[in-house]
Image 1 (tube, rainbow, N blue to C red):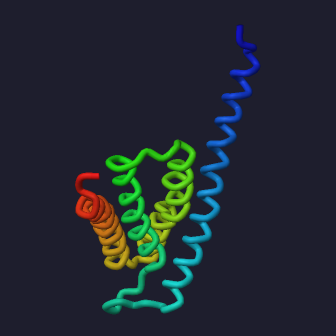
Image 2 (image 1 turned 135 degrees about the vertical axis):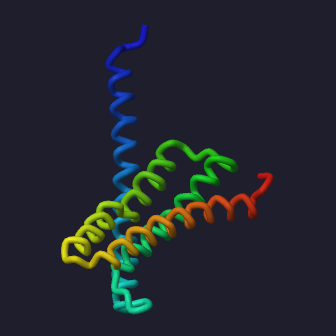
Image 3 (image 1 turned 30 degrees about the vertical axis):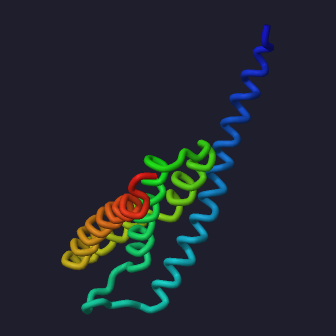
Length: 147
């Protein structure tokens, strides 16, 4: 008969491995977000006279596209181990993209009465992120249709 402590230690090891995978992915995702946001904001963009948090917009659109690419690959072409999927999808892209910052920036614009810019930012973020995700699935479908 199997020692019950083996099951506990195996479960604990699985949980620790899962947490480690998400944490490592999150570490690199957060750094990638920091670098990307700072790179975009160094140009102090005012596209069409509209000043918005373009860095946050950029990471959310890029992240939506790349997460969809990864999801399409996982769904149709390969099955990575759970810890790899968690490292990339949950850890990296969870930290790279940032809904909370998007929400706070939108609310900050609303709170100072910048309604048009805030509503444009909220709308364009949602539209571009959905388009980015759709494009990610489309690209993989076209590049690897029968794999």
